[in-house]
Image (cartoon, rainbow, N blue to C red):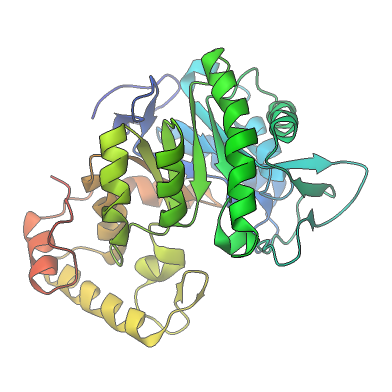
Length: 353
């Protein structure tokens, strides 16, 4: 891992993003909180957080029209506007476009899920994976970001969680026949440098990986210190196909950052008893080696060769600093060996050097 990035005062390691020509920092910036996820965020604080990420050497910035119905894209664009365009890699998503003449909420099929953004822009989001809808979403993102180009475009939320089991097959077909073909053309024309999907479900990532020619995928919460079911076949398939992975949710909604405390969350809900118990055992092993649980949780996914970056959300400069410092702390190989010997980590899970 190497490579100094323009505009960064602190060097973070970088990795090639799969078979694309892009190189990204191993810690990326996830912008869902900038869209007022769960709580409203002050505008100046949001933009200062983006600038703090730049100052700490982050070069990968991931956003989406979905985050606050475009608000996160506005804030990302404002935070990056003074930089040379070569100083960062910009990733956004398609699958929703905004109707500025209708206000509030998301136009979705019955049963489709939408997370709780506390604020955001007063535009109506329309879920649309067609070719025309994809091109409209892409153009709108360029305008909100104030950018002359976007490097990575991801097909967003084609999963059971969002659409329900009855509708997901139709959405997958629509995405492959519409969004994928549109993004494939933009990549061929040189407008995009990489295309992929952004999902919460390993099975759907695998389906897309087998169905098309993708450079990258953003998978949230499914390859962590707590769970490694994504190892096979998906991570093995990604490595075989040269798909560079961006991993979100490496703290499993918080429990791997807070530990097994009262009120700890796992998968956006209060953690069940078995998860609390496993986390407590993992934390005991970490403590025996003088390692913070959060440090081990951040570092572990980077042990897999297919993983290019862990994408972390943040709402303050202090959180950015904490994540970068966490990456730099030494972790002994004996920690990973003990986790495996205790049955807390899969034997075949690759671990960081």
